[in-house]
Length: 104
Length: 226
Image (cartoon, rainbow over all chains, first blue to last red; front, side, top):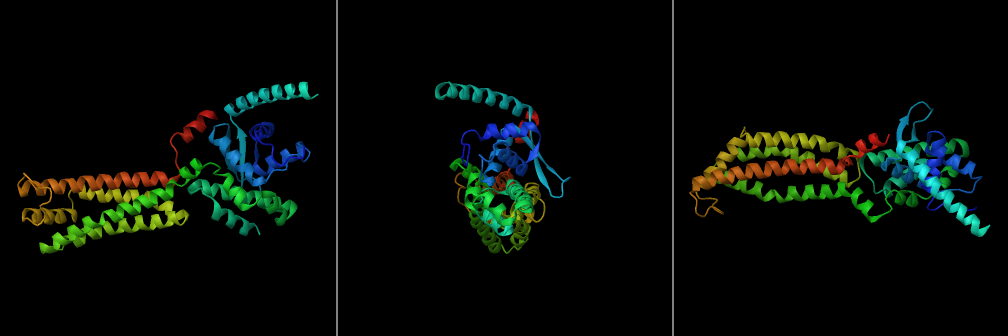
């Protein structure tokens, strides 16, 4: 894709990555980069505002983990977050299907 | 390099209090983790410029306004303190005219609270964490001072007695039209006690809210969502 920022779809991407397993910010970004095969090469600092926004919306919750060698803030989906992800996925699949039908 | 980067973000963040500390702690953990794998220079490069990162936490003017409420509260607090100086001067003048030193003790009662308020405001305006941490202390000190004044305990009792004597002696008759000086003295003293005490309490409580970063219902919304 070669895009630096998946504009408009960041919430869906973050919720999807975190639905696989709770993670701290660095790991979220690593998963995004790995799973997109390097296509989503974000300015990493800008992911945190999105995580904070999703947390304020009640879609994520987070807590400090002291288990690792260094302190990390671990994010996980809430029940509302899972429901929101389902909705986002449906919308995205409908949109992608329509695009494929037209573009081929 | 990480320290310099974080200092630059710190200087540009328009976020305060607990949220600011959390952001900086998360960015530090991220940078240290990335630096362990790729080196500090690469970690800083991947993070984005400090101005971009800092601005992304308050993308809208409304966000910046909400996040700037602590500084606004500090300015309001300083303004209120400045506005109360004429009353302090009046009490001192009337006390002096009555040959009383009660005003000195009364101002000594108020001075520690005023000093803590001043320090807290300076800290908040300078973006220092201790400014916000002084706010709960300030609220307790204001509450204690208000209790002393409203309950007419020493040294407030002596000061207001002196003030009422000055009004009865005709030294302060503004707003006394149609009333005896004795009644006017009692009314004025009561109004000053009540309005300034309750006003100071409301101001200190509002200040604490503004600088603490607390928002109503945030925790309960998060609990409900989880």
